[in-house]
Image (cartoon, rainbow, N blue to C red):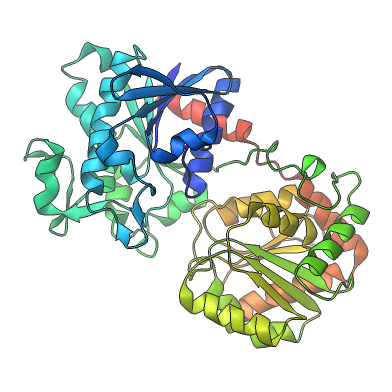
Length: 466
């Protein structure tokens, strides 16, 4: 089976978040189970920094090799993609993003034909590539090369839809009638993701729970009715690269470990983290870690609302990330006033994130909504017990610990309010105080399987049914 990935981000060439991780890892996992994969990506300025040999194929197209033999094609157009940012700069989104990604989507079909890569599936990701199913639908009836090609569109975060002024539609060089027949129209504007949802042959998102949530008004971002009409939104949980995130082979942590020999090593990593962040080195307190964007969506309002109660608990809290100024300022003030309990580094720092995953006892992830989430999977990989709100991919990957049957791999609260959050924290503290209970929890965390192979096989089943 031939599958072409079309994405605006693919690690290690271009990445701003989880989309890049997924589109860098899933093709490799599919290749391992026998799928012939090609990848198409804009030829951003940052592509050359990845350290891979880049071959010039023809005017406007370059190529690198990922994995054993995955051809990664870059669509080069200097005026669109030779910029420092992928989607914008510090002043905001680029004004010509519709033209940039409209061009990229149209050229994807041209490139695949030139490369003689006849895809059974073109797998598109988010609004930036949502026009590919539209162009494919217009092309395959007239071009035998694509007559058997099906499109799959994956929604990684429904909040980002690619909405532009109605008058910019002409820049796409599509028939005016398609605004209504292909679903572009959205409250007097055009919505690229909406058009992709209506034109794609199969529609997926990144967790089973999120697939259900986005069909409700609370999470549907105005597209819930469009999604419900599809009747086929499939949720497939993302995975993590277990080789990349491996405490037994992580050069950034003080002491490596695995599920069979971890107690002393995690204690050593905890002390190292406490010293690094100027916290009192104490084994008797529960150390909670947070790695992520400091935003409302990630739960910062809930955490900061609970600060006074958290300060009274036998716990320390470590934060790493960048985000909204209102939260970073308040967090800085809390850490200034209570340096023995709170520590924060307002930056993106992967080596430090690894030390937090390895050195924390519990991982805080009280997101308001979370399409999938990777951090909770990484924390489980490192034997660090997650505390989460029951939403999206968090609900699918973290199960509340039950003392009766010793099942579950974390702590889950089901009402998004201060009381429920604090109750979950108290349950975590009580469990940590009982060594055998905590040992079982850590073992359950280590046993959680979120490898990409599992996800890849589910995608292959979906491709075969498209």
